[in-house]
Image (cartoon, rainbow, N blue to C red; front, side):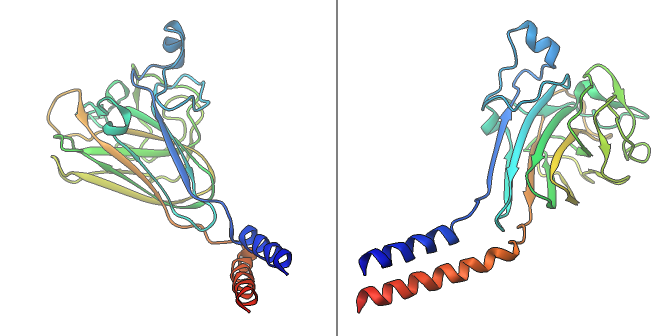
Length: 248
């Protein structure tokens, strides 16, 4: 009988066991592009190589595993980075131009389709933060060139950095209405599983200065469990049955 109970319990545990939400982020402290990094022996990612080898000087790469009905969450901030995450005051819009040389480029991979909420905070700086969202990981791009194809100036368009970026929609950008230590802006979209790029900067009207801090949060709503999730209930019932038999 004990063997039967062990088998039943094992089956139940296997049935209720499932994927858990995981998230991780790795940082590129020097903000180097691929070519420049190779001259210094390669990128020095803080938490492991994310597998990105295109030429965008991505400052951080995040991976969000949000399966099994579990919400995913990742916070990109200076505490985890070990260095100041900061952008130029007018990187996101300066008259008719968005200046890439004062922007930060972030990449993230979404494991499963979900409603995703992206939030930027000024992180106690005098920033008026803003960002745009595109699908894909940029295959080109430079800190030394302007980019125009975002809603701060014109309707969103593909490939503002040259190549590799698709359009999420024409309004996939946001900027804070205020400036200062508690300024923030949020964008919520349903996104398919895959890769995404955000361009982060200071919206126009902020004070001057090249290193205004920010933090960035990626939140995903829980992914519905598949039809087979009824196995959870079965598993719990089997454990209860096994326990009752054991007591008898």
